[in-house]
Image 1 (tube, rainbow, N blue to C red):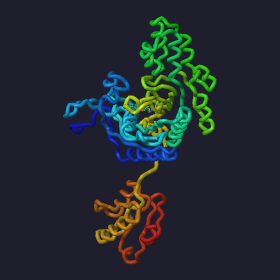
Image 2 (spheres, rainbow, N blue to C red):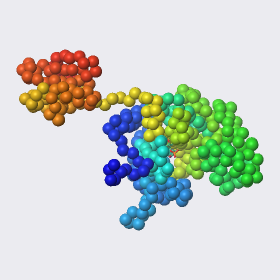
Image 3 (cartoon, rainbow, N blue to C red):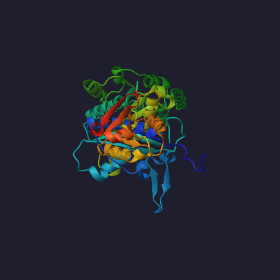
Image 4 (cartoon, helix red, strand yellow):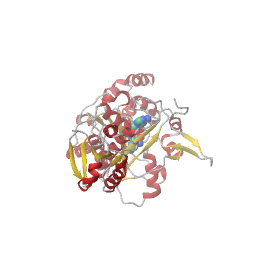
Length: 407
Ligand code: HAM
């Protein structure tokens, strides 16, 4: 074992992993392009305050924080919504609204690692700032839905709720707003037994609350959420052909910054870490001195989507070179290099043997490198200018001029 290993909760990505990651990234970027979202980038570390302003000092326990050499308190970003709001306040205040922004970046959380839960992970997300509420929420839900469809994940389950439900249920039962946050984590974890016990201890009858939170269903549940405006959002989704979601009054999502609609997408087959997307409406810009701007967004757990695709045996594209050029002997090496260079200049991907192998070993290597075709260069080829081209899949051979291969 090497004397120094990678830190707990982090991963190395081998070439095959990176090819899959880039492929998925490309699919998601393509969805963002079709929805006309524009990408932004922010630093990997920020002033710790950016995150504590929103979530309170306890968030520090879940973050990678450090004091820099200038004595500043810094944090590796645990997510990208607060940084995006800061970016807006620093650089986009004058831009025409609504703003439709997206991002892809690594995030860091000090968690107990397990499959699908890492200390460094990637989020692909989007935020809309300053849209009319229902239109913005519809657009964000439709985008999240399309991201899952575009990535090819099977059977994602989208649940839509509203933070007002839980707040109102608790208030109606006599729990004042200041006392409510201690119940949120239990709802978040869907620990309804724990919630029942906690409410009982507080002297609150749990039945009316649980009978709402435990329900899932269709539109009819919206009567439990009067004034949420979700009717309009669901109408919007219907016009856009987005179906297959359920209404879930029991979504809490760390209520500290969400103010309205909230949603989650699960891939049930993933087990404990099944949530591949979370988001909702919030109002954060004013914390960063940018005035009040209603916003809606989400972040996809990029790594979890990959875990889901791999578990389902998804067919990722293979990434071998178009051509592997093999000189029959040392005398043909120069010609092989000339052919490789010409192919590359013409935009084809091409490799040649770098290990001075004999023909049969080089062909074996070409197969394991995943080359589509091998180009064999021997004495004959040098004389006639006709190259032998072997299809690595079927084994068929043909003769071709270099010019044909360049096309
Ligand atoms: P979040 O639910 O904390 O929301 O994270 C979004 C997604 O990131 C999760 O649904 C999950 O798939 C993935 N994720 C979170 N932690 C880990 C981890 N340790 N390892 C692997 N994947 C993880 C947010 O971060 C909000 N900023 C989303 C948002 C955007 N809300 C409004 N706009």
